[in-house]
Amino acid sequence: MSTAPVAPPAVPTSPGGPQPYRWTCDEYRSLRGAGRFNDRRVMLIDGVILVMPLPDPPHNLSVGLIDDWLRQVFAVGHHVRNQMAFDVGTRNDPGPDLAVVAGSRRDLATRQATTAVLVVEVADSSLQIDTTTKAELYATAGVPDYWVVDLENRLLIVFRDPEPLPAGLGATAYRTRRTFGSEDTVAPLANPAASVRVGDLLP
Image (tube, rainbow, N blue to C red; front, side, top):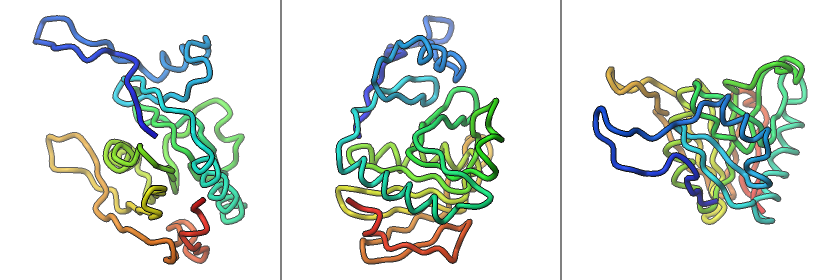
């Protein structure tokens, strides 16, 4: 899915001059609670609110298939969050399609998830942001296993081994990236006995 910035506007800045305003997660959710986004799907990246097109049937089908599988695989000791909030610091809520979080749903009765054992994004035109910006955010959140389902090419891209980048960059990235075809099988790190054929997760 493609993304388009809503705020702040892209304007030139200079030290001491006008600066773009970057939203916090709390402010972003206040806007959502006030109905400012209507039925649009949005996410917050580095304080910028991005609007995503509504998902099409293939995207919905893939998310549903993966959700069904994950709920079987992680029936005990974890729960699956479907397109729910996910805080990475104070200015990022990438809104993952699916996140497997340790513990019960009631553990998050008063707060948002900040890490997960597995995050899955289903991508068509959003592939670039899912494999770059979002990958860095999930690595920063300490997510050990990040999957991107590439609908256009019918592939699964798996990111693992988050590691801080060299001092001074203030970021974390995944050390390993592997690509699996539709006939390949893969298993989540948190349940290595539960392998799945990639094609079974695709529409």
